[in-house]
Length: 138
Image (tube, rainbow, N blue to C red):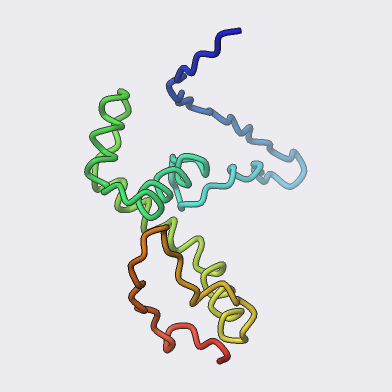
């Protein structure tokens, strides 16, 4: 049996949601179902693409200008200014989670913070952990 690893390029899709307007004959009011949820107000980027942009920026340390070039190579027009706006809205959307982690850390319920990971080299790790940011019990 031969195994071959291949890459399937990621695919982008545009989801169009039609919302019908309804009028009441008696009250003469117009009603319409709510718009689908977006993490950014009046945004057109879906939550999965926003998560990818945020992970590439903060997790993989890929600058936004490189992400913009990569999207342009995949025939998606996302200028740098749009990516900056989306990162701003995305970080605002996860702010409650950030506050919860800080709250748990302040109460001493996040014991993994403050531990330093090292590789197999026999080089001492430099302690750069700031206890003022997350005070852990000693």
